[in-house]
Image 1 (cartoon, rainbow over the protein chains, first blue to last red):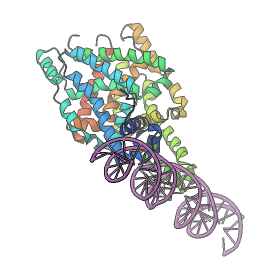
Image 2: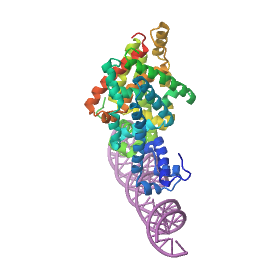
Image 3: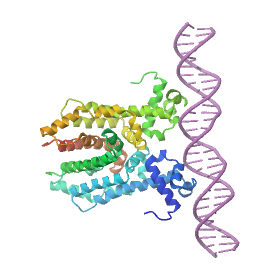
Image 4: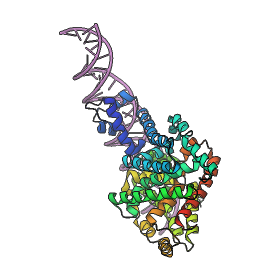
Amino acid sequence: MKCITEKSEDKIKDAARRVFLKKGFDGTTSRDIAREADMNIALTNYYFRSKEKLFLEIFRDVLEMYFNSTIEILNKKIDVKAKISEMIDNDFKMMKEEPDMVIFIMNEIHKEPDRLFADMSLFKQLKSTYFITQLEEGVANGTLRKMDIENLLPLLKCSIEFIFLAKPIHKKLFNMDDAGFEIYAEEQKEHIKAMICNYLVIGD
Amino acid sequence: MKCITEKSEDKIKDAARRVFLKKGFDGTTSRDIAREADMNIALTNYYFRSKEKLFLEIFRDVLEMYFNSTIEILNKKIDVKAKISEMIDNDFKMMKEEPDMVIFIMNEIHKEPDRLFADMSLFKQLKSTYFITQLEEGVANGTLRKMDIENLLPLLKCSIEFIFLAKPIHKKLFNMDDAGFEIYAEEQKEHIKAMICNYLVIGD
DNA sequence: GATTAATTTAAACAAGCATTTAAAACTATA
DNA sequence: TATAGTTTTAAATGCTTGTTTAAATTAATC
């Protein structure tokens, strides 16, 4: 992944990504980024023209990363139960690899909803996945409860993402260390899979 | 609620609460607060000594507000199904009244987890509610699935809170205006109640 | 190897930041 | 009404912010 001699532009972008994800746009200074990248403070503007433009580039990338794996799974030719399980596993993996991502996305969109318009194509893709067809077929078959994608998708996303969002609260409230939290999260994951399938799949 | 002549100290605190909730600590300047309160910029420091101290007072209040109604409901002498329903209704109401609250809490804790230590008593209260006894009794009875409070509580909280957290995304993704979102949220609320009870209560 | 272009640098820029100052304007008590 | 205490004010504090400058250094082209 990492080149021997990473280009300055990429070095800055990678560093900025790390800092922005941790501290958010408002909490990050140009000097923070330069320090993290180990580069001169003027180079951010030389390559990206402004802090705002650099941020928007990164935000676009992060949003894409957040949605891409989901879209991929939703289009897989596997049955609904397996798909739900994989969706949740994937979210779980994502939250472990990029624990700052979801709170970052939610917070930046909350403060400036227009930032969301960065990439419309992602939304179009999400609205035309094979999963939607599967749900409709299942309802017609009588194997699935009637439920719109609008209602099901957030259920799949929220449960895992929320416990990572609220990780500090959980650790404090239930006296867990990081290892304890991992065990707890795995437990929770299985509950969620069972609960959603239970509800969606008729006669499960 | 609002006095005819609100004391300056309260005027500043109320204004600061509004601004902090909307923009977060980093995104809020002393001048923002003074402008919102329509007061001289020096008065914030006159009454609260610093922006940080004012913030911590407000953060404590918000955290208390977030947990208090939950604790109250968990201690009610009503059956588990009714309690779950009321918990979810309460979260729903809270998110409509204070849409910025949850993202604010999550974000500030994420950036500075030590802020959470502001009020330990809330956590103690949460860990000794009547609901825990009820769950244990239900498991002993064979009426409830074996499930720890650690696993159940986040399920109750996450589903409603998450769709409000991600409200801009939902509106954009599913082409909703504010009215449409309200209808959608009500729908989702009923799904969540049914799904959780379905899973928890044996033979439901 | 000289000349042009691209990159990096230290220093400076004005604007905005949280906070402080000291004087002014109130309010309450005598 | 005079006096002491509280509250509010405009102005200034020193520091940090994002961004720019112009010179220095490196790389590329002939």
